[in-house]
Picture 1 (spheres, one colour):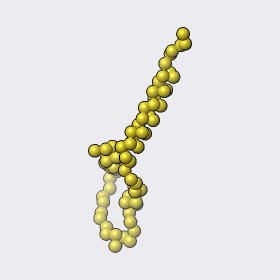
Picture 2 (cartoon, helix red, strand yellow):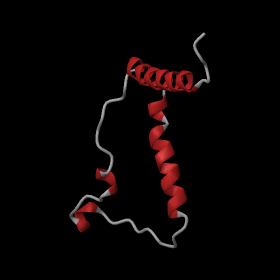
Picture 3 (spheres, one colour):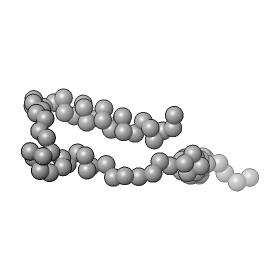
Picture 4 (cartoon, one colour):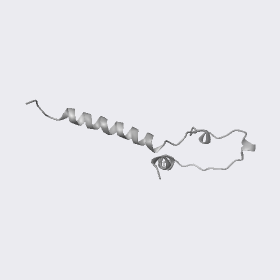
Length: 79
């Protein structure tokens, strides 16, 4: 499994926790009766899953940035 497979599940869990704070009832209504698509079905834009190489490259950039910041912050003096 790659990390992109967990993103929708994590997002749904966050929404679930947010919505638990409200008291409401859901009622199913056919689209033919309503006439419009719901906003939530249009919320997530279609996108292609990232390849492993792209994910590794992004993580590598972050790791190098942290490494450089750490090295610059070290109290090292020239001899």
